[in-house]
Image (cartoon, rainbow, N blue to C red):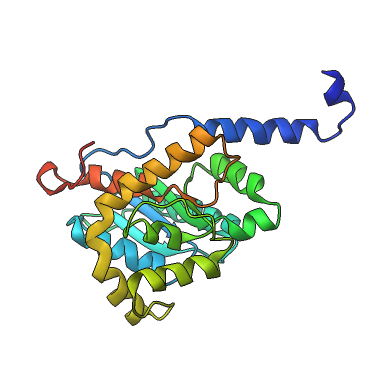
Length: 248
């Protein structure tokens, strides 16, 4: 044990957090998939995120039995992760009992939790969230401060520094739209439909944002930033070759 560690009773927590941060900054291939792979996507939000991914699934012509989008138990990211784990295990149990539909997958090849980081960071539980996701084998598609930053990337590349929280990010989306945006499902569906076609460019923008923070050595999670592009790219890669809109 080093001298600095000996004088710091929480040294192991800090070391673990640093290890997680380094792992997050490394290039990874989690944003890839094979044609026909089955996805479970559990979302923190109950309107915007489910609507977005259902519309994206339709755009990529992915069968609904292969992409199951379900809202999480609560807005706490840890509940969302546990919900994803439970849903994934339930799928396997139903398969063993022969209780799945004829075209339903016996298991999910990819299990994702779509979460925001703003509250978790503010409450000092972000490291706990990351560790839980690793332990439960759930991949995080997190956005800072919230999912709306991912939506902003459909309009153009940005690393704007004036998005301290979710309220600011939602206001920015409304400004970019020049129209209505909110948590009402009908309004949200209309709004997202109007810019969904920009998702391939948003993926490229998300990758550029990550490169920006890596170059700047920003402590993760960088504000603003997103990992949703990895999930979207994976969904793209799971589509038949002639339906993909991004090269792997």
